[in-house]
Image (cartoon, rainbow, N blue to C red; front, side):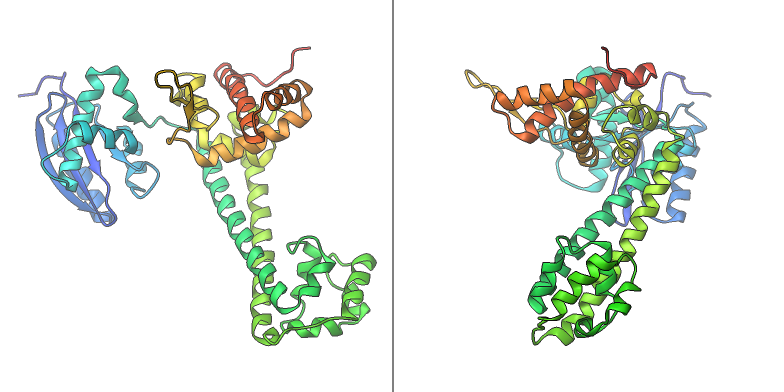
Length: 399
């Protein structure tokens, strides 16, 4: 006999490094099954076979809640979405508070997966608890691609910064005079000169004709190099560290090439993204920051108001007042990648728009620091961005 269609099949997944604990239940709180799957293709097949077995008795839709969406649980979360099931992301901070209020007898993956089912019931009866389980809405494919590309680019930029700092330290120790001919170790012409010989000591004997054949080196830079060659000095570790310097220089050149290729690909994909195109209409929101924001936002339907968007982008603070004390604190559930892109974009924006620059200067006159003034301006822009994306219209400045 078919069970009442008012009952919905719900699944809670506690994510582990190698195995995931799964609890299957219904909207009335009854627990149907508990099991564990490995993070393998066979484990995923077992997961869907068991769930679909219960789905024969209980009608759709099926709701699945798991922590760490788009993280360690990949690709199980994507497979759930492909089947058309409802997918909810567990907010780890709010889950921790829930466990403090309603503690279990012990701490285990099995108990945590069952607690996730309890969160479903809490969400049904307490509207304020809906933020604990956040439904993962479908996002345009191009925005998913932008998120991948922008995150990859950021990792490469961070790696390049680390390698450049290491290269600077090694040059300072081996041949400090060489650093005086450039303001930045990562300059293309300087890297071209630095990597043309494996033995760094041979750089002091290069002739002008050989220098001019190197990429990005003309008469001006050749004069600087020859001026250094006249008093070139190398420390006792030049032979050993010189090979490391050559490897680091080559790595920076390789990273520059990869970062540029990613930037070009992001610009190509951003041209097909509605959100990226609307953000590009805002002065100062360049190709990199606009693409990163489009990827992290995904779809404006995720946000109920401009306040939630501002909180997600790190442009808003939380009230921390108590008694006569009036203050605020930084929120912990912020997308740090989106915040970094937003801060850079807003800083460029205020330099191009006189109204925004005056607003920034007024905040500085009130005693706010630079980052605080940028966030205040960013908070105002979040209202504009939310309305732009909700109404599908580009940015414009009223005369």
